[in-house]
Each structure stands twice: as structure tokens, then as C-alpha cells.
Image 1 (tube, helix red, strand yellow):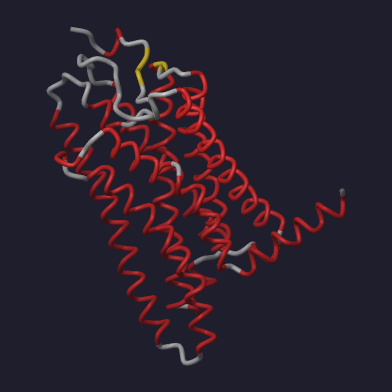
Image 2: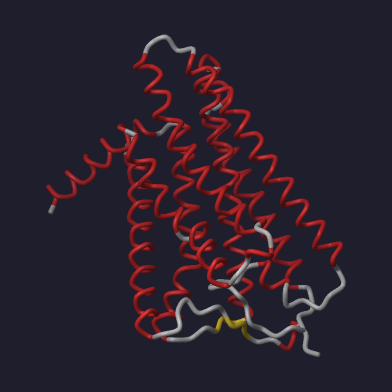
Length: 310
């Protein structure tokens, strides 16, 4: 019976069986990752260069773009490498690093989306207190708390997962290292510790979800009381992109981790994992930029200046 100390590498799930499909998946992943890099890079550049965008909403959007870049850069390059070179291996250390950084960026994204919901709530429901509740120092503290809590959360989960003895082989049913897949290889009886971390994760996620739902109920009630149609449209234009991103992120992630085992299959698990780990980082910049006139205006100015300099 082997344990984790005798495992030098893991076998990831291949995205396709034939060489032609592997190359097709490589091209698709390359396109999605380039779109994510370009979109999030443009948002970071626009917020950093546009002085009129130095507001709490865009400050948190910049942090969200950083977390999107981090999450897609954690999983996609290895999947592209495996598809291009027709391999499925990842080292034990590389797998642990992938688990840590993926959890780090995903949990930071959830925390940032919750903070951005609070920003919208204060902006619409308590506009007179906006400068007090969301000053520059308060925003910096909230962003630092989001990243710090994500670091501790991912460190706790990674340390717990890779401290368990593994005796059921080294094949993972996923295209990247994921905690549920690694736990299936465990032969440990420490189910109580694993259950405690799962319950803790569910509580944290549920708490963020309840806070977001409660905040948006208050936001929509306040927006519907705005007398002018233009005012309601402006309020909705700042809330709907955030609500779309939250819905996409939470719905796909929840389904991936809480779906019944009876409907689980390798192809379904692979499709769902792509939806919550690869698609959101590429779609988030598009969702935010489509309805935000200030962001689109700044991006146009940056592109115009860059073309003129050339």
C-alpha cells in the first residue's frame, strides 16, 4: 500500500483521446486564455491610467481582474502543455502548487465579489455615507483582508489535503489538480477533519451568497424608488454586470462541487470545471466593459494614444 510520500506525480484527465481533438482543445484554450489576458489586462491598464477611474468600484474591479488572471494562469497553461505534447503527468509539487494558487485566486474572487456588492449597496442605498464608509483607507483594508483571507484559506485546505496518505493510485479525474479528486485517492480515516473543512467552506460560501442576495434585494428596492427613468437606468447599469458575474461564478462553482454523484461522469465533470475555472476569467472583462461607459471611454483613449504613438 503506497502513500503520498511514494507518489512523485499525478495523472491528469486528458481533454481528448485523438491527436486532432487534442490540438483543437489546445487552440481553444489558447484563444480563451489570450482573451482573458487581453480583457483583464485592458481593465487593469484603464483603471491604472485613468485618474477619473480611481474610485472604489474600479479599484475593486482591478483586484478582480488580477484574481481572474491568476486563476486562469494557474490551470490553463498546464492543460495546454499536456494537449500539445500528448501527456497527462504533473509532478507532486506542481499539483500542490496548482491546488494552492487555484484556491487562492478563486476564494479571493469570491471575497472581492462580495465586497463589490457592498460597494454597490452603499453607493445606491446610502449615498450620503459613501465617502465615509468607502474611503481610500477602508478600500485598501478590505482588499487586503480579501487577499489575506484567501491566502490563509488556500493554505489550510492545501496543507490538509496533501497531509493525507494516498493509496488509491495517482490518476485524477480532472484536467487540473482539484481537492475532491485528490481526496478520492486518500486511504485515511480522517473523515472528520475533511468534513469540518467542507462544512467551513460551505458556511463561508453560503454567508457570502446570503449577503449578496440580501444586498441586492435592498438595492433593487432603492432603485425602483428612483423617480427618473435615467437615474434607474444608470443604477441598473452599474449593478447588472456585477450581478451577472456573481451568478456565473457561484452557479457553476456550486454545481461543480455539490452536484449529486448519480449524475457525475468524467465528461460532465470536465465540462462543468471548464465553465467555472476557465470561462469566467475570459467573460468577466466583457461583461463589465459592455455596460460601463466610463471604462469603455478610457479604453478608447488608451488605444487612440497608443496608435498615435506608433
